[in-house]
Length: 511
Image (cartoon, rainbow, N blue to C red; front, side, top):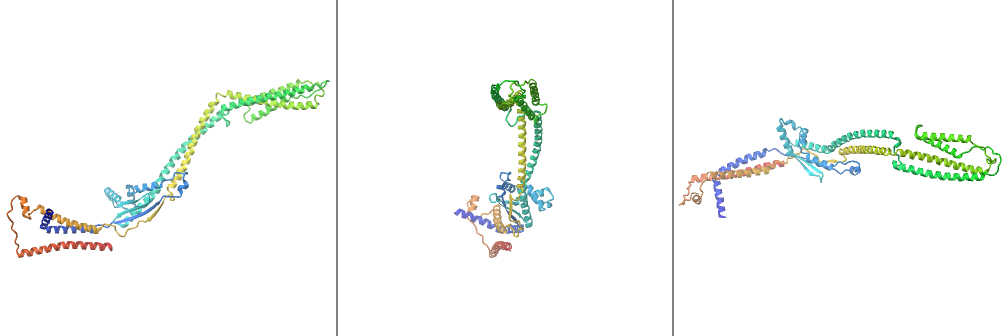
């Protein structure tokens, strides 16, 4: 403790030797510092607060119909990129700051200054953003904040719309390509169907299924024909048993062959049906004409070879008449079934002859239909995507999807926020005192003196025999006393000047 006290006393004595230097330096530093602080320009802060409402009623209504824009992401992106060099340069053009720059270096310096002075505060959770800008010109600060607010709103709306327009343009190009592919596929499918009209599968199934069905129908028709022939033969036997009822000179009975007539009628009906589907040169129509000519020739031959009946009452027996009617019906059924058997036989033979080429035709048709269906599905999906992209672009620029509400509009501030002159004045005063004391201490170190016998002994290593004190005259004492008063007056005036400066600053700040 004693050593510390001795050190402090030595320090104060060293400074006291150059006390006037310390006072003068303190005055100089204080006056220069106060002048600089006083002449600092006022700093005005322009502020604007905006609330971004991203909760829209359109979102649940349009969910599933289109790709909804992520408005929260748009706002967050604009918040992070608002203080970018292109946006700041745009702000400079909007407020005419760029016209003051004469060189590129000045332009870049002003851009960096604006970037450092602009601040964006706020979070995506609260959706409230604050834009601030500090400037010595209050009107300029207001204009800069207003320009930033405009860029913030426009950028949030227009970001995704440009992307949607590019997407629509790309989809339109793809739709044109698929339209050409669809046209080519449709023409190829049409030409193939015209070329292979008789071999194309219908809605009933593939070729193998149709061939099996045709054979089943032929087998069923043959079975029905056998049953009909058995029924006809039974009627004939009954008529033969009841025909011998008397004798006498035969009489002419009209030639009646129900079986032949029924076959001719069935062939004519089948021929009419074929003519509705095919031309006269079709193999089925040619075969039907040939069969009809043979049946008519057979009927003419029977009419020429007909012999009169030996039973005079054969044409008039009621029982024979009924049996003749039943026989005619049976003959007609037999003829109809025989025609059906012939038709099914022809169909089965034709399908058998086509069994080699039909599967290839079906495979080629399936390939063409598959290619056409793929192109058609892609075309329809692209059309749907295009409408969805258009709707998404419209939603990106719709004010209903994102609402900006300016809570505090930018205004020209009346009172400055800085600089804090009272604090700066106090810091200058403290720095002046420290500069004076430090300068006096440094001077004492450059021009050291021995203030005690012990310091002299330690410095020289010699024994100090004694010391002689100074005897001051009365005149010297009076002069020293005046100097002390002047010193204390100088120190007091320095503190008084500090108080006066602070009073002026406070009065001006409150005015």
